[in-house]
Amino acid sequence: MQMPQYLYNNSHRFGRKKVIIGSLILGSAAGAIQAASVNIEMYTVFRTISGMFFFAAFNPAFSLSE
Image (cartoon, rainbow, N blue to C red; front, top):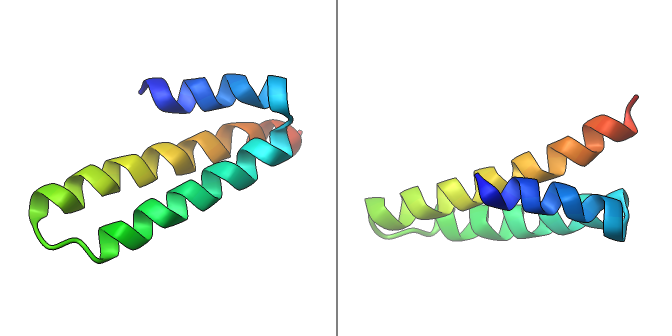
C-alpha cells in the first residue's frame, strides 16, 4: 500500500493532472502485461500493480472533483 500513498503525495509536488495521467498510463501498461500473462503468479503480480496505479489515480482525481 505504499505506492498509491507515494504517488498521491507526489500530486502536491508535481501537479494532480500529471500524476493522474502518469498513473493511468502505468496502470494501463500493467493491465496489458496482465492480459498477456502466461501463469497465475504473473497475473497476480500485475493485477496488484495495476490496481495500485489506478488507486493512485483515483485519489487526486477525487480531490479535483470537489
